[in-house]
Amino acid sequence: MNDQKKLWNPYVAGAVLGLVMLTSFLLAGKGLGASGAANRFGVAAVNTVSPAHIDKNPYMASVKSSGNILDNWLVFEVAGVLLGGLIAAYTGGRLKRRLIKGPRITSGQRLALALVGGIIMGMAARLARGCTSGQALSGGALLSAGSFIFMFSVFAGAYALAYFVRKEWT
Image 1 (cartoon, rainbow, N blue to C red):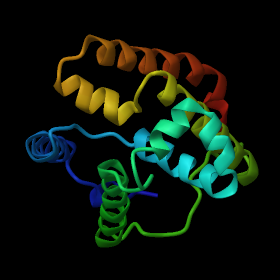
Image 2 (cartoon, rainbow, N blue to C red; image 1 turned 180 degrees about the vertical axis):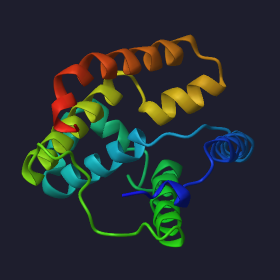
Image 3 (cartoon, one colour; image 1 turned 30 degrees about the horizontal axis):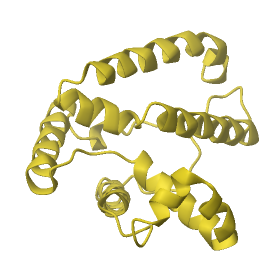
């Protein structure tokens, strides 16, 4: 699996990401983030199944009262990220159905770990008032002390957890 030649140069990608951040601040007056869109999708899903539950939950009710739940710039940002990722994967010849995992883990275990990790990350993003993209990119660009503490915590937690899951990848 030597796809390295098909990846962007990380310095070029970083510079382009910086320009995207600058454009976002200039045009929308806001930075980038994804957890807000995921939150809106969740509220929309619960509203479809049980609107009464949404009305009883003050936080979800505030999201619902802002108009159409999915009529928000974050939803369109995430749609653009997905579309851009698909285009980048296609043009790089990397758009394939595959599951990347270590030799000592089954596909089911890999998917279960990914699901559990995603749930934990989503819950943590709500507690931290933003996901890694919102905290690190937007908060970091604004020199927010809380965002730097968040990112140091993310890296420290990842290094601490890596010891326990290292056998899954080697």
